[in-house]
Length: 399
Ligand SMILES: Cc1ncc(COP(=O)(O)O)c(C=O)c1O
Image 1 (cartoon, rainbow, N blue to C red):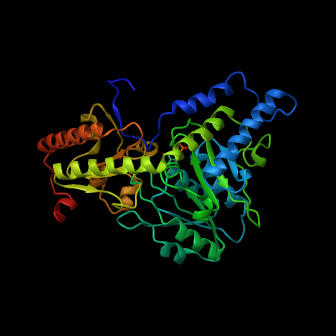
Image 2: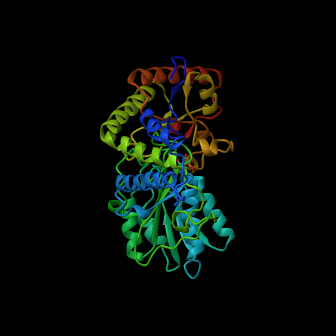
Image 3: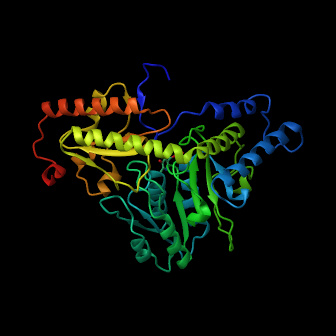
């Protein structure tokens, strides 16, 4: 990055491609440009070999036993859609009930809405004030009609890590399929599909220093087979589950990115956790009426979500020139609505609108964090001085 580039604190939205990932992809744009489905010549064989090699490496990275369990998609959004719509439509019948949570990504929530219009029923479980879903609530919501439970691994706004293993055990006991959206978790915390006990898992490359436009749906091979109705019809690629010419360079890049990010996962998560704690300490010591959103410890190491009482986060962001961050998920912030995740934690509209999400990643240093903390405190103080809140915020009343 150039010196004058803003400090990037939006790593939940996306990450830059690692130069080593870029390098791994290069040959597949030009000299090794073949179509992985071309079985009659060397260009095709080379491309196919690269795809199958990447599939094996990605499977190994998430502990999948069989590379055939990896289905390439365009990203997590498509993987989530394929998981939910795919299973529901393929298994349409007496089991017409799905369970999810109120704080899922729109890729899951909107898929559930779509299924409701097709006659399925959906339970959207509430979460506690710290963002955690109760496994007991999942168990209590399962009926003989329940087909699938979908609970995200790590929340994209508040970073909260859900008790996947506990939920998986409940699903297994009731013979209900279990899907998790792990877009924010893979590459940041250890994710092993068998240790977690998930049947389906969505992820993508661009959250882990890989390219945009490539995702994976992990689909466990089990008996009886999990049936999925494809969303995209055509040449029958990916075992008929996702037609379309495979983007070989992106697939190769995904494999390299996930391997690289796992190489120093523990070290990097400790580093980011320490930086994140430092940022929170400086902000919470420097300002009154600030509130940490989400569970204090059961969260992604690089995530900090803070509500600043009495002000609007958009105003802070505008004032904080030189820092690239977000007030929520990039995908839903365009709607202008207060975050559905923060609302589900019980925050008022004003508190939700006063929240900033700091997403730390590889490029962030201690110096940057100190500078950001100082700037945030300055700007929030200045904004508060100009806009005295009409009523104190809930958190202010508490303290
Ligand atoms: C939890 C979660 N699911 C899904 C998505 C969408 O991912 P993609 O951009 O790969 O479609 C995101 C991206 O912000 C996310 O954080």
